[in-house]
Image (cartoon, rainbow, N blue to C red):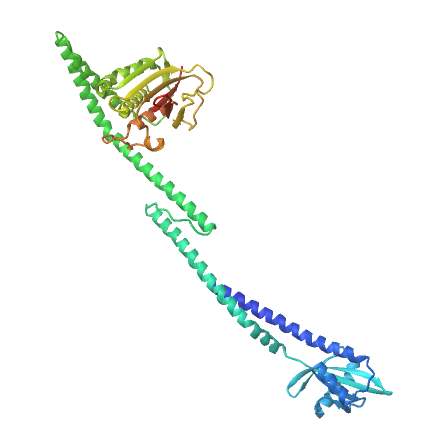
Length: 478
């Protein structure tokens, strides 16, 4: 770039010098023409004094000669060879297309013109000689006068070019290092501050690429962990389920053989916990289900399914001293592809609500059917929607004209972050949690083309208003 800039400035300097030299030569010719035009129509005698004055005003040399070439008056002493050249020029001029001639006198070039005048019935010739500078001399003179400006311009341009190239080079190097680190598996970001140009746009795009690659890497790691956990837990879950089934059968046989025991509530609680554990294991196994979409459905009484889940968590409700309220309409039927997976999803959501509410917290569960046409809206005007999810096999969420709505409300603090983070596998805020409860629930609800929504609901009061977390699950009713 520096060589190109230097070449351009030198070329411009040479071109301007050539133009200036050409213009100066044209000005010399025009100066001679003006002198000739001024003296052509004069009739005063050309005495020595007049010739000296004309030479002084014109800045050249003036020679007056008769028709035979004899010099009558001259501003300078005329050598014989110059006199012969002028005489020859005077003889050639009337029939020549070149009215001017270059005469070398004392080593200097003069542009010469001849004027024929009639005075006192005699022909007089007036030779006007104007100093002529060569093109090379004029070019170098113009070059020498413009050279300081050109050098200053070149130095300034080089300085600016070096500063700009240094700045641009640093930013380009930052982008190069960023892409090099991206290729090595590291995903940093660069500061895009600076001039608002194409490099800034490239930096912003590179930062976006870094963020996307980091998110994709995190998602890939979570998927790998989930797949590995599914593979490892599959066999373990089958073994646990068999063992728990055997334990449950043993307890049931013990109840049958010891029927005289009046209070066997502890055994009932043990059986309930064994069934709860079986359901949780079944929910984990649902993650191993085939990714192919099954179109066959089972008519399911969702009311009975929810009541069964409430029965399973009753010991946990008693243990946490939870203020629990339930309202379930009868005969809420849905066509479900995997009822056991839906049972596991509702079980996980209800357990999460009980644990989020804490000891002596409040939890309510309601199951109702929407009778209005169009897309139902389970949230209320006072709700602040925290998240809304739902998908189908095609990636879109269809309008549910008639829905069965399950709403779980708890007095807990709600999510500490956003829903997208909370629903990712192995992300949990519980000290002893593993972070797959919401993943299981989301997986099961998505398989049924359902919706899972979370919102914060404000309950105004004259004394003390409070907010609760509302989890809403919607299924298409039959």
